[in-house]
Length: 154
Ligand code: FES
Ligand code: FES
Image (cartoon, rainbow, N blue to C red; front, side):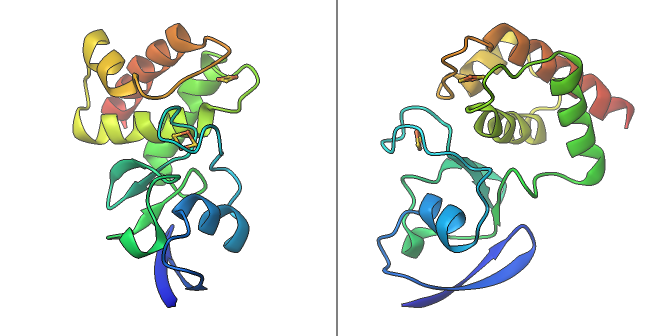
């Protein structure tokens, strides 16, 4: 069934079965390949995107269940917030292989939008579903604190 999705502020007409996961709509239909496939069962967080600002696992949301505007790593944040988060990630050289990092950044962006000054415990709780096989967790936590400080300045 043809559906219109708003993704990163642009409307896209999608003509696919209702049960196709949003992840594959984004990657294969719309060509936004920054969102990654890791497990397909909501266990890794690599596919994290926002729907109406809420961090969701796009491998588990079917096309017919998309309830609002979708934001991906290609469109997250205002220029200020994105610059702050990306710059923090660069400053702390968070990424190793990088595969999990778009999901990590999407989860972190949702956390900072809801809680601009998270504690270590709050960061760990919010990020616990985003796995990193390279073990970048300490740098992710540091980068989130730094991004929070940068956003406060901005
Ligand atoms: S691919 Fe969706 S949570 Fe792992
Ligand atoms: S940076 Fe390699 S899996 Fe996270």
